[in-house]
Image 1 (cartoon, rainbow, N blue to C red):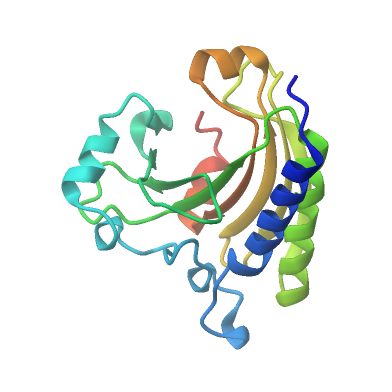
Image 2 (image 1 turned 90 degrees about the vertical axis):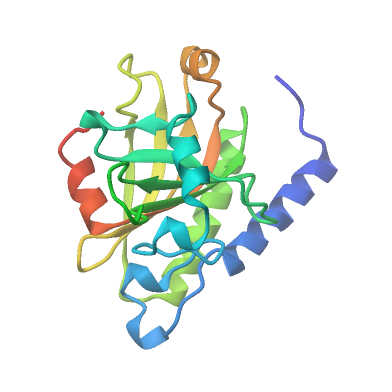
Length: 208
């Protein structure tokens, strides 16, 4: 296990506090209870991916071995090439057969390898900030085994904000099992995730 220095911890804390402030942009406080008013790097749920990436790039990502397809390939998670000062990786959830490649999920990720407690502390800071900004959103604590790992050894620790239409903002720490990390090149992460109403309905039906 790699020891994290004091300076590295300070840097991580400052960067995550920066994310607390800048992760979510919105058009109106009076209409904040609409996930379309939340943005990650300028992108919102319901936008067309083609507004940000070429069709050639999206199709190439759909053919990548790193792209994750849900059950029946109804949805796919593709990695983007966006350069961000806030996240190490940004991915999108789209329908492979949708001509507009409408965005149903946006996720910003930061690696927290073997540093679960630090991840949880910063997750709580982000969740509290959102709760203070948007009083109408109820927070739900959700922890458990990740459905992708059938061994049950990979765990998630989430703070969730549900919208009245069924969409969701989720801030969670992912603690993958060693086997999953080695097989899929996954890393423990802090994730900030936006999901559409349709995506949440799909996920509720055990799509893994």
